[in-house]
Image 1 (cartoon, one colour):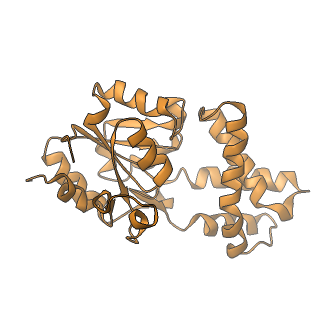
Image 2 (cartoon, one colour; image 1 turned 120 degrees about the vertical axis):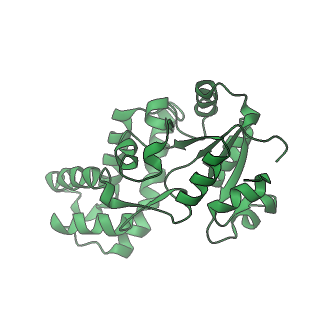
Image 3 (cartoon, one colour; image 1 turned 180 degrees about the horizontal axis):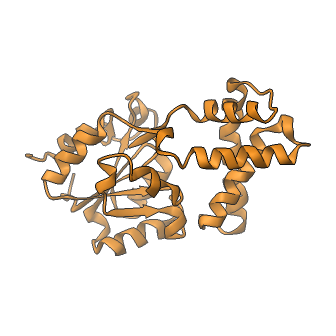
Amino acid sequence: MSTMPQAILFDAVGTLLRPTPSVAEAYHAAGQRHGSRLTVAEIGATFDDAVTASLATDEAAEPHRTSEPQERQRWRAIVDHVFVDLKDDEPARVAIFEELWQHFASIESWSLFADVEPVWQELAGAEIVLGVASNFDARLRTIAAGLPPLDRCAHWFISSEVGYRKPAPNFFARAADALGLAAEQILLVGDDVENDYRAARAAGWQALLIDRRGDAATRHGLPEQHGLRRLTEVSQVLALEI
């Protein structure tokens, strides 16, 4: 890296933690309890489209702006979009939404990737400021409180609290201001090539892309050294002697 970062922020979902069971499996279980006949595969095929549609609706109103109420409303719209077989049963869709909202607020519904604890300890030992920069809502704080080492994290930049979601330049500007650092002194590690890698670099930050399959950097035409297969490779890229 051209400048040794003073702070390293990590994206949350897909970078530090993942839903367990998967989103499609959780939606399927909740749907079945309220009369849905959709399969896990059908839900999985629809979910990404539902997320994209919800973001497009938000962007049409005010690009990248968000808040706690907006995030709750957006996830309600996603549930409505997914459960097309219950389009005439609003009480069922409301019940499914409420169940899923609570499900994904539960520590038991999430697990850390195995490389999180070692990289966190390694980088904390190098006296680098560590934090999380995530498109999420306040539930992330509840989840992290039960998942060491995230329970020790002091710097949180959650889109619903920041007021903007990545890739908005304002998200990155507000995080940099809160840290009291220049853009080039901050490194973001994330799994989304647009929201994490390219948006961070556009904001003047340093960025690394984590892809545990190992081919994202190649597929997106990124410098090979900017792609990670494990978070523990961060220190190697930075050439830290720790």
